[in-house]
Image 1 (tube, rainbow over the protein chains, first blue to last red):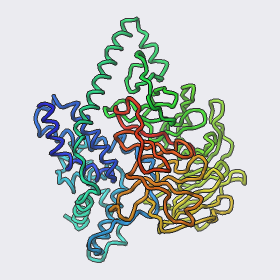
Image 2 (image 1 turned 180 degrees about the vertical axis):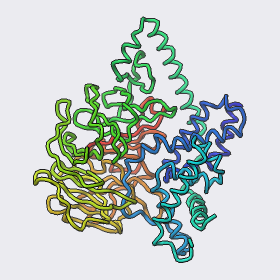
Image 3 (image 1 turned 45 degrees about the vertical axis):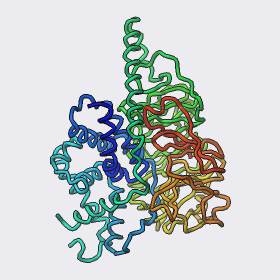
Image 4 (image 1 turned 90 degrees about the horizontal axis):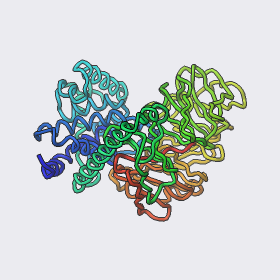
Length: 166
Length: 385
């Protein structure tokens, strides 16, 4: 694969990778930073990756692991305010409001738990693939998923409309 | 699939359904290729330099064993050789460079020294004599004071919740079940006041006279309180549980800036029971970065969510002299940046692709050229306070 292949890969796949990056870090500008770092690392490994399927998997792995390593540490200096800005919903239904609030709670989770949720529930990766991407065991993926969902249920427990999570 | 899982799946997809701006694909490949080539060149130079030094008789080993100070460019493990490229437009602030290739994080001082940081710090804070490299806030992790002389002074092993007063000398922390304040002096962290600590939490801000204590949780505070060391031991103030006040920073005149639900910005007097001195509501102030108050105490830098931005946060500056009446920012920049005050009237910002200087009189950023920043992400070092 040559340089043009890399450019084609970036053009085709970076929008999707950027969306994943956003869910990992919770901010579009930081997501751009994260994606740019992942693409640089991908290009450094370009010649040995061999085929395009391996490239995407490699980039995704770099994306996730960078987000949960020094990237995570870098952003711990941010101090969220007590009152997060509202995200206007198109229909104003209570359920959508709760889902927005759910996203705010997802953003509060530890980086690795959030990464597990993004891989499992946004990217629809299997537990085994999620474990491979994060470099952990399947058991760890299960426990992190369970812990993260448990936290979300507790945090939102008093605010979920009746019948929604029962 | 439980209802929560189903809800989560919809929520995640909803967040990325419409990015606030059109995806910028043009240029990503060019930037990645350019950065990768620079990294390869540096690696090749480093290998060549190491070979030369080893051939010269083991000087490398001796040097590396005694120092972690290296000339610019940083991030190469060989602390030697090559002229330091001059910075054509040197930022007056120190920068932390997070490399794109998993090498050590390094600090570029304003004096053009590249310093490989001990361990991977979560925070680097400028102090009067050097820098503190700290672990995750609230977590006892190895932390160091890297002095201007490049002497590395380990801080107490179980130190956590370290905050620095605006003067860059006075420090408050939690350690060994106690709260303490002290001074960085003559290569030592000299403890001056101690008191038993509450079960959880610790210092969050320090004016030099008053320590703001608390335990943040989910955007609010489980509890908060004030300890004034000059008045004696810490005593818990009743009724401070579940408070939604989030203190942002001390001001140079000894007050605390804080936010409360409803987008309220408040100024609190820590020597008078956290009395509200001033307040203004209706500000869409989002997350703030470290060191939001300008050195002269006149301005507040914050992330701000304009009503027409689709929820995107932008860097903004508030005039702390007038915001209480105007209830609006002085200036809102075109996007979000990590910022630090470079002087009373300028900010240095990082957006991941480079550095910019932000001025109070214009929304247009001025690109700051610093050779080598394309090796990674450069962030301004947090200033004390």
